[in-house]
Structure formats: C-alpha cells, structure tokens
Amino acid sequence: MNKILEDVRAVGLMPVIKLTDPGKAVDLSRALIAGGIPVAEVTFRAAGAEKAIRAIADALPEMLVGAGTVINVEQAKLALDAGAKYIVSPGFVPEVVQFCIDHDLPVIPGCANASEVSVACNMGLEVVKFFPAEAMGGLKVLKALAGPFGNMKFIPTGGINPNNLKEYLAFNKIIACGGSWMVPANLVDNCDWGGITALAREAVTAMLDVTVQHIGINSKNIEEAKTTAKLFEALFGLKRRECSASCFVSDQVEIMNGQGRGENGHIALGVTDVERAMRYYGSQGMEFDLDTVKKNDQGRVKFVYFKGSFGGFHVHLVEK
Image (cartoon, rainbow, N blue to C red; front, side, top):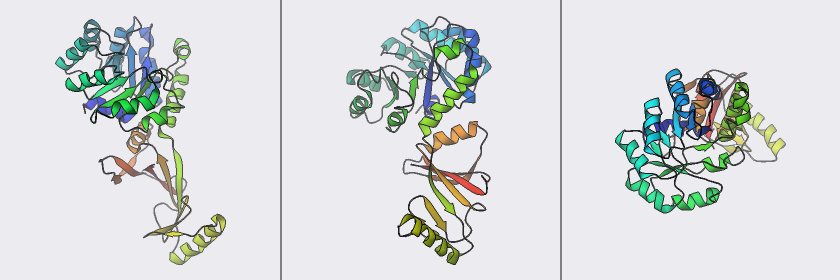
C-alpha cells in the first residue's frame, strides 16, 4: 500500500473539515495533532479549502492533510499545488483518478457499488471511499460489497460516530473511518481548540477500546505463587489454569511463579489494534520496549511492553 495510505491506516481516523476561514486551519490542525489525530481531509465544499490546505502543509509537515470533495480535475490541480498529500472524492470521477495517478498522488474515490469498485481495481487503486456509509446500508452492505474484491481496502464516511466506530474498524478491509463529528462547526466557529482536542482523544479512545485484560502478580517463589493462587481460586470459585511460568485464575488474574516484570507485577491492556495504540501513545510522549514486540501471522504487532513502570507494575498492550 502507498506510504501515505499506510500512515492514514496507522491513525485509523480521518476528520472531515469544512473551513470557510483558512486562518483557522493551522490552529485546528494543531488541536487535532494534540488529540492524537494528525490527519485532516479539508473539503472543497468550502471556498477556503485551497488556502487552508496550503497553510497546513506549510506550517505542519507532519500533518497528513488531504483535499476532500474533489469533483473535477481543476480542483485536483489546486489541491496538488497547495500541498495536499492525497485526494478524496465523493464519487468516482475517472478524469480525477487518472490525473492523480499521473501525478503520483494517492486518490480515494467514492464507490457505492460493485461496478465502481471494479473500475477502481482496474485502474490500480488500493483504497476507495464507501460513501455515504450508513445511508447505503452500513457495515453489512460494505462487507457484501468488499467480498469479491480481495485486495481492495475501504474508508467509510457518512454516519460514522463513536457509537459505531469500533464495529466498522473491526472489519479488516477498513483502514480508517472518516467523519465530521470530531470537528463540529460550532467548536471551529468559536475557535474552541481545547474542545477539538478533547473530541479527538475521545474518538481515539473509542477506536482503541482499551480494557484491562488481566493483572499479573509476582511471587517470591512457586510456593508463594501456589498460596496466592489458592486464595484467588476461593474468590472466583474456579480452578487455576497452569502455564509455563504462571497460572491463571479466571482470565483476569495471572499469578507468576516468581519475580516477573515489574516490582509488583504487570498489567495487560487489551486494544483493538496494537500498532494504532503505539502510534497514539507515542504521540503523547510514551515509549515502548521494542525488544518485547510480538507479531501476528500477518506481520502486525500484537503485543508490546511500555518502557518504565506504572506504580510498580509494568504494562503491556495486547491485541484483543
């Protein structure tokens, strides 16, 4: 997949921004970055789109800024000249797609049926937009549409919100979800950048769906581990499940047979996507012990420890 699209996939979210005042573009983008979303699709539905894209591209090169609602080649040319890193269209316009291909500019055209996805495949595209997602039947229809196209990936937009975001992103052919709920007009109009940052963080939290999977408790030796395990067996009314270096009592408590990681033990946090979580927490200043990385059969990270200790516990992420 194209590097820009891989970067979009790593974020998982694509805020759709309508800016009539390009002077707000950089502050808005900084607010999104602070909230963990360095992505912005600036829609050409607003007259200030070209200037907004240029301002963001010049001031914040780390921002994955793209042009949205591009419906003709003229707009695509303006977006490219302004510094857009990708183009998004609501429908499939062959001339726009060909212009982007000719200029090595990632393009994500809107596709709502098998005929349009077929054309996209034949033009060598890797990702298309499913729009309007909920109005077209939602995830059920998207899964049926994606079935015949093994290598095609999708970015659904239209009706996506924190309540259905996790369900959409659980489908492995979706690389990101787009929407304007992260950048509501009232907050932008009032320059409420703190509010935008808060909504961005809420969106990331909804996407990652962080939960405590289990707590690992260290022991001085195996005898102490057995004693501790018996206490938890009594609490849960369950028999312990033996592993090579520990045992589990229920799925929530792991008793280590000796001194494991951390002074007191470890905490396992389950997330929907470890690589997205690593990117987000990394953007918030946290570091990872890359020597602890484990990958799944597709080569994606499924397990990693944070560096350092959290109240005497080491903490790791694990794919749910």
